[in-house]
Image (cartoon, rainbow over all chains, first blue to last red; front, side):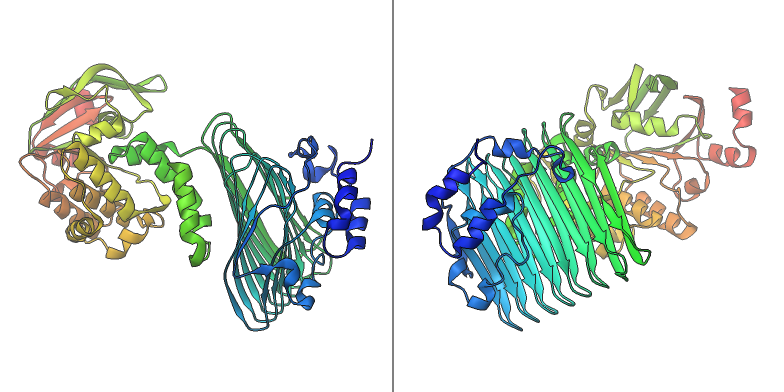
Length: 368
Length: 248
């Protein structure tokens, strides 16, 4: 039996745009995580591959961005420099047809930019490339609406020297599966903020990797709202590759029914890389007995000169807080809604002004 | 207005109230004093319907209607208010947002129209003066990072906004310095009204210097063992609880 998607690739390869040899190499090297792969221990790659979906072009709507392959050559040349081709990313590298480029020349302010990527009843593989040159500032929202198939987008974010990029990332959808790779590359003294919201989909994995130059800082926050049998996995692999780098993680899961969330926040500080700082908070609110969460901090620090902290909590709504609100006249459901919304508020509040209202509305709608 | 008739209550199977009887008339302020473990906090919680406590006997009636089958919010809708000994901190919920929701829930239950944001703010600013509560607390998360005194001010401020029929003040003096105690007691005194009863639960007599009750009751081992006027509190202050225990 041939590997998944090989035959489908041969059928469409000649019609795909861009560099054929890159695609072919990605396809030839394509392997998927197995059951023993620690990074995939709590999300089943086999289930994502159980159905082989026909590759299709999903919808791409852009506001303030240009179609990926129509951008300036220097910017487009960064494709594949932050993301790799292993695992599901390889599927994207082989099949992607287009997507979005957000490019900010040196010193420019670009945004708010909106990129809306539609899933479909098939395999969709859009790519987003965000390039902020030195001193530039970019604000971008990438929103995925899943179809019933498999959505495998790759988002590469480059922040040049002292540049800053804010990426607000939203996954919605009734059902459907997604593996999203966000690969961040920090220049010297650069900053990248990622705000990741998983509000829908049936199995959704968001992978965030980062590396960079001296004093680059990544601030990653996320919110999962899960109900039914939704499964949401935030998987972070952050490299503190240079002195003075910092990473901050704040993730909140709110889970009802039989929903499940997985959070892995891997931080690697290499030997000899001094003066770095890593913080991590992962908190889960369980609204039903059947809901569950797995949280793994995974700090790998081969170094004494680092300031690191992490904390994780899994709990239910606080009974004393509920009683307090009820004593003041709120019903159980009003009080629960207020407390649940409050649990989400720290992440929502960190979204840039331009996008905050719509995220707040999405959270409110979920709670209602 | 409030009648507790032979109330027995327990938590986790441990009996705490063992036949407590107490009646508050409209407009009256009653103080309940007692040593640690006498059941003071249990008393306030069973009146408000805290789910951890089970009433195993007797009845609690407000204006003749039993409260026992009612949820905490239904009791609040009928005008029951409790000032918490330890008000909870709720990060992410602003004090004003919460209190407006609470007020409108209570107003709706009373058949009054809801207040809009502007009218609510006007009312809130007015009532904050009563307890000298700093204005900026209204926009902060509920009780989060408030000092002990600010939390207690916030409780009495909420009482002023919600205008309850029955106020149960559970150890409102704990953690307060003398000045704050005086301010809060003055605030509570200003809220005395012919149609509002108050049950002031305290360990110490000093609160009752500022908030002079119409009646004082001594609670020991789950029962009221002695009742009197405001001077009873003074006796307790000088003689302790033992003489009452022995007499009871």
